[in-house]
Every structure is written in structure tokens, then in C-alpha cells.
Length: 487
Image (cartoon, rainbow, N blue to C red):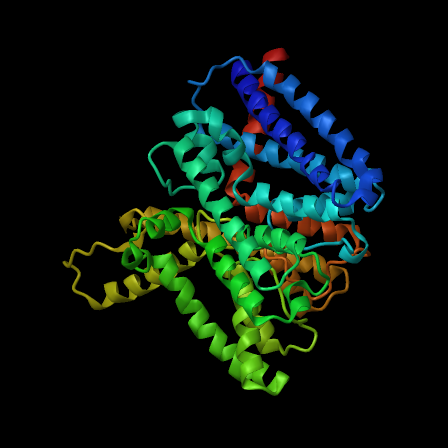
């Protein structure tokens, strides 16, 4: 056990070193924004601490590259890595005095989980801090542990790969898969940046918004988010990037191979467009057209906001203070559903909802068909036909129940602090689904308990619940074993 934990500590140390190096990237802006030179220490100090600490932890590792990680060990690494990354990433905010500990951890977790809820006033925030917020979403969006360890895991890190919630591998080799994910990820961000600049967005804003869109993060450099630009081309570019960000990376591989027909046959892709095809007209015609007194405006707002909600990105073009309960309910439902499995998005996940709906249809058909009929129920996934077993459907249903119980607890906490039922349901759906849209509950002066409840929700939503629970149980179990051996 000692040797296995040396392996775990070593891998976590590698990730901490990676975060330390990433903290130095905002300094690249100093030649352009020289007035921000007084903020260097806020990034350099935590960077050096992280690099030294991570290096010391890395030296503890005794295993070579052939060491294989189990799923439970991968879960422990992922949990420890995310908690460590959150604390280190929060340090610039704490050292600068911009945020207190609770607020800084909230902002860091929101960034790393690609949620986008924020307690920072972007109008009073320097370019280095704005870039750091976007970099956190870049790191978290591609999969913190998977990406940083892809070069050293080789084909042996399946436990870590699955613990990051990536069950659909693009290629047989884990390292090759993660490298391909990075190529796709950076390619979309680069393309998005150029398109934004062509559409008239300033270069610094373009970089930040491209990163936030593809990572389905939603951090913006403007208080009014995408709405600040009042530009239809910018909104269309953002919608496309949000779709790319919320799509399963394995499905991207299918599309990039030129298999367009096969791409649109994938079950969760079809479900995503079906959900929006239902939600957008209903919201536009029953709520937004009469609100904005224009058909075009109502449809335009509905398309952008509902896409942002379902993809769990969190960009917005309008506020929701004057939206009626019907439109808010649709938004809450889409935020709970969330994005694609194996993507940068959060939420219950479109794949799981799709399987539950298909299971309902299959069960109804089962009652109508003769008992001796043999049926093979399947869905189309990126790798091809997948025959859905009862155990798989039950596992998904159990996860959905756990998700909704957690959601109910979070809503109750917000209700206990005096927020309305509608606002509480909206805000915690946004937190747990790692969306980032807000009706005003999340703010600089929000109660600490509310911020911590949302922080826990964001972590659980990003790390898929079971990873957190199983990793926690393994740590507790191993501690008990160690204590028994000593006494």
C-alpha cells in the first residue's frame, strides 16, 4: 500500500508542477500591459511554491512508466489533483487581496470545472487575472489529470483516464487519445480566436472568449458577457464553438474523419438537436417574442440562451430578471440535462437522459410485444452500435437519482438563506451542471455557506459524483487499515 500511495503522490505532484508552470503564463502579457508589473509576485510566488512542492512529491514515486493505475487509484489522483489545483489556482486572488479565501476557492473551482459563475468584477480586474481565469478553464476543460499526465502515462493509465469521465477513447492508446484531444481542443480555440477578431472583437477578448466557449466555461471579459458586443456574427461564432465544446471528443474524431452521416447518427447528437428543436420554439413563442415585442429578437435570444444552457457554457446576451417562469423552467431543465458525455461540458449528460428515455420506450414496447420475442436494444455511439444491458440502464438511473438528490439538497440550502424557489432552482442547476448562468444569487457579497454549497456542487458535477465518493471511501478505508496495523 505504501508503494501504491507513493505512485499516487508522484502523479499528483506532476499535476501540481503543471499548475505551477501555468501560473507563469499570464506574465506573457507584461510587454503589452506594462502597468501591471506590480502584480508579478501574485503569480510568481504560488508558481514557485507549486513547482518545488510538486517536484518533491514527484521524487517520492518509486514506480516506472510501466506501473498500471486501477480505477480507484485513478479516482484518488483525480480528487487530490483537483483539490490541490483549486487551492494553488486561488492563491493569486488571495495574495492580491482581491478575494477572501472562500471567494478565491469559489472562483478557482468555477474556472477549473468550467462553470463560469464568478464573484469577480471584471471592470476592475487586470488583464493578467482575466487571462488566468480563462487559463483555468482551458486546463479544466480538456481534463486536468488526463492532459497533464498524457505524456507519462502511456497505455497504462486507464484508471486515470476513466476517472476523468472519458469512457469513449478516440484511439486504442490512452496517451494518443489525450494528445488528439489536445489537438482538437487547441485547433478549435485557435480558429475561434481568429473568427472573433474578424467579426470585430478585440484580440484579448477574442482569446479569452474562444477559450471559454470551447471549454464550455463562460468566463467573460465583459460584465454583459457576449451581449456587450451586440453583434450577430459574434453570437453565431459563439454558438458554433459552444456546440463543439459540448460534443463528445470521440464524436469529433468521427466528424474529422469525414464521416458526417455517421456523426449525425450518434444518439446523443440527435438528442441534443431534438431537445433544442423543441425548447427553442416553445420558449420563443410562449415567452420571449412577447417580452421583446419582436419575432426576430425573441428567436435570436432563445437560440443563444438555450444553446448556452444545454451546452453548459454560460455565456449570455441578456439578463433574466424580466423572463417569465415558463422560460426559466425550460432553462433549468436544459441546464440539468447538460452537455455530451466525454466532453468539456457538465450536467446529467445528454447520453444518460437519452438512454433513460429510450429505456422508457423499450419498456412500453415490451409490454405490447409477445413475451417470447427476443429484443436487442441498442443505441449508436461514436464507436458504433452499443447494446444497452439492464445493468447499464440501472447504473444510469442510479446516477440520475443521486444527481437529483444532490440538486434538491443544494436548492434547500439556498432556500434556507432567503432566496426564492425559482432563483434557488436556477442557480443550483447552474452550479451542479457547471453552466455559469446566474439570476444574481452568486455575487461578491453572497453568504459564505451559499458559495461553499455551490463550490461543492461544481466539483461533484465536474467529477461525476461517483469518482469523488469512491475515492473518498478508498482513502478512508486505507487510513483504517494503516491505523489497525499500527495499533
